[in-house]
Length: 264
Image 1 (cartoon, helix red, strand yellow):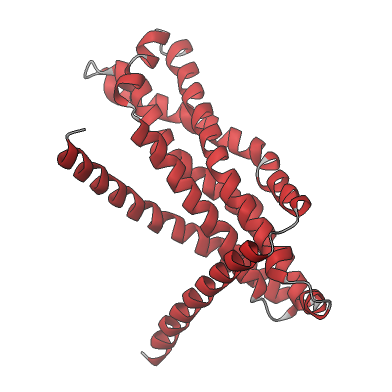
Image 2 (cartoon, helix red, strand yellow):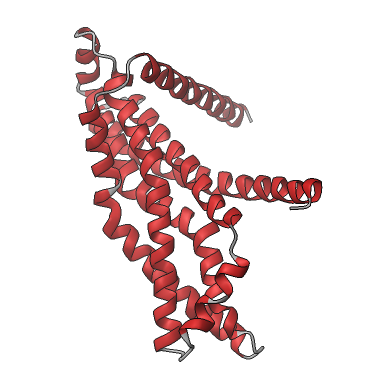
């Protein structure tokens, strides 16, 4: 029991230290914004270089959704809702989550490994000795890059998913293009689009800050870097799923309350 209590206590301490790191980085960035060249490097690394894996993930997921939706709906005479289901799922749930997973695996692990290696080789201490803030030089550009590029990558993934579903529906199941696309403008609202973007924005914060925090806390040489990287990926995946559920509930409750209050 004592061991479990210690682990729970250590978890709360870790969350507190992570929050402190986040707010310190925001404050440092406000006082002394990071160099644009550093931010541009992270935009390239997180965004542009992640396009292939995000494209493959979104496109293949859209095709699978179209296949599953068509077979489930066809015997009920509702196959025309295939496009609507693919669009809703890609924009609100599957697109943001899978994009965050791919970016975590490709970029988040790299962030943690780089910062962890710099920590165990005392490069971060060297930066401090030269009066260079690690928060402004190392962490702030990564957070800005993650927050900026995750929503863009999510929209890109959702669009490719919808297109992948279109190819399957039209060229495999012989649906007409109008049957696939016509229900979308009617039933997919701005709320659905903004739900996905808000989720992606929050996931960008989570991935970049957790990865950087675990990297900055690395101890124990090369083995410690490996452990920190593994832990950061597992923690990011877990929090993405938990926060996704909480955001989904919160946004839908808020949206329902607004509709009931103002009759929108």
